[in-house]
Image (cartoon, rainbow, N blue to C red):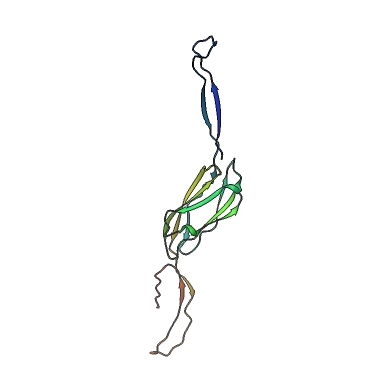
Length: 171
């Protein structure tokens, strides 16, 4: 958004008979505030460990700068959990999305801050917390039935995913 300004000429007189100026002409510069960029609010989000967030929708705008000229950037308060390069902005014009991918095997909370800047350098900022929680164990391949002679060794295998460490118990 551009900032407008107006210059006004004021004449001051010392008596009601406005016959002559009592002081030299004075100029006053008054800033005319313009609206800056806008960005919609985003609710706090959560995702599981090793799982990107769903696309998070938000909108941007500016009354004085075309949408194509607005710059959107992102930061993370916890780069160990969410590196800036793992915050992907998408969409177009004024309707955008952000997808946040946490670092591998990490849990915790990071504040993600999105900033929109217009041609005049005016900014709007929105922040939300992304909480990354442990993933529950999921058996990807259960053990298969096996026949064995009593007293002979039997070997079973299983494949599972989830937050580490994973433990298996046979009963």
